[in-house]
Image (tube, rainbow, N blue to C red; front, side, top):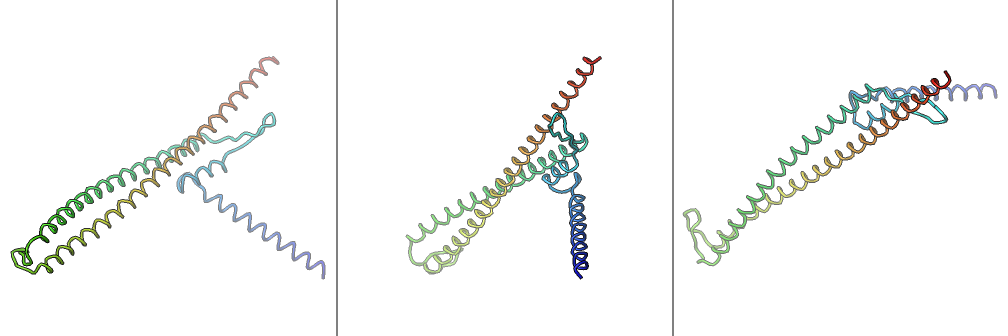
Length: 207
């Protein structure tokens, strides 16, 4: 009876271990340089890189083709960020012009209202005499509509500005990450070159 329980526990542990290994392999297989965010492509480079030890130091070796592919992908991402920033800047500029136009119309309407309130009770509106209260209601309704439009465009402007800042921040992070990876790859390459040269020099001396 005890043996059966132990056997069951062992089989359950083996099944869990196999399932966990398959899941980890599936996650690794999803990594690629042909798709996915730049961060996952950096992870792909890390997973696919080889390593060795020399003089007690561990070195990572990255395929040049993978590094070039990653570099091109990063440059493409940067170009896409620039395009998005330019598009957002154009949208912001258009909204700024619209807001300026609405501000001008609002100012003109307000000035007209001030002038009209100083006139007699009856006044002409579009060629029709109306009561002052009715005229004021129409003018204030127009002002309220313009204010609503102004608030809407201000909201759109701020939202576009936030998106632009986020895009710029993401672009800066990608550039820093790529530069750091390029620097570390260059350092590894220089270390390997120096070690190879040292080995060559040692071989020459032994001869």
